[in-house]
Image 1 (spheres, rainbow, N blue to C red):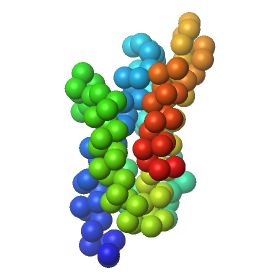
Image 2: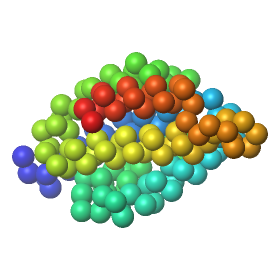
Image 3: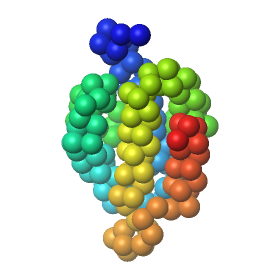
Length: 149
């Protein structure tokens, strides 16, 4: 498969899954309004720094460019379920497995983003408590397994 010609299709198939993964981690936590604000900032930070870690992967650059400025309003959290997210990830995994190292990098990128968001907020006063809630930890574990990592 020629990745250059397939890149727009691959990026287009990954973008909705990225938003679902973000929504899934946000729903699985209990971070409240201020925590959600910290999570949104973390998403922007992760995406801004992604080229530093995945710079040689054109697909990840395409995904980051496709996401643009992250806007939580683009994600309907009320419609997201963990089972729905995992179903999307399962559907995408087969395609990613067929991309060799580029696909492995994308899976790492997806998991890394979810983990970064989960660690952004914490329980307790002003988010100073445990950074990853039980719900987020369970979500991350299941996501990692579903991605085949």
